[in-house]
Image (tube, rainbow, N blue to C red; front, side, top):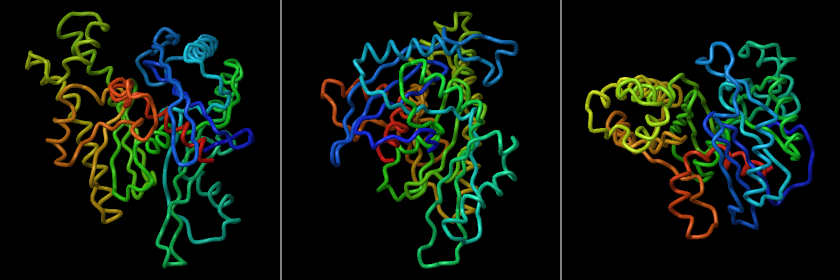
Length: 356
């Protein structure tokens, strides 16, 4: 986790995920061995983006920082969140994740070696990015086994933008973290020794993450996104995007018109092919089968999706709830279960702050 400022260990932390469809804010705390959901808030963010030329391309929407800062302030005030320490989740299209092996070496030698190796994988000059990495566990009986490194690179410009945003919102930036790390932390528990595939379906892109023995080992980004499904429904029925979005969320793959369902299948099938390819690659490299598949992101609750993915992959499929291990009012049970897939990134980065 990239931490540009040093602070004392906090008892509470705010996690913020600035998504294309909404801004999610959570405040969590850790008291002893327990975790508590203190507060949360969400606001649709579509109006906070300014369209620029080529608006259909990923990342071509430019954040209106002033409006987003004001929106974050509004969410904090509405949810009565007083904690100032914040960690931002950085979307996959603003980060670069890779993994590689290095020869065994001393802990002191690792940073220099990682910077040297990073230049082979990252297209931007190393001087223009901020690096974060994790050394993955290897065979404890083999002292000479290679080091397995999971590397994250974030452009310095992106880091500076989030520093500015935190300041404008009246918050203290504790850290920023790649979305894939936050999502994996919130959904796959440390005591889960299985190999898990986490599929995060977003509005602009999707990621396929492989978590093994509690550690994120691989992260792949793909162009499939939920907007594609909405546009198919909109064009087929001749209705507005807003109406199509409602139909997508409420009917999805269970829509009464089979021609629409077939078109949705055609969009989803390439993602399933990619998932099978990623799982096969992991099996070849690690000699280990993916045992479970988790669906997350706003589209995880798409009616019929869980069943369709299960039929295709022939594996147990779960729509996971990132709030399942938290203490909260029982009256929120149904609400949190429904919104859980959308909040996995913000919850995950906030938890990371409590563990630092």
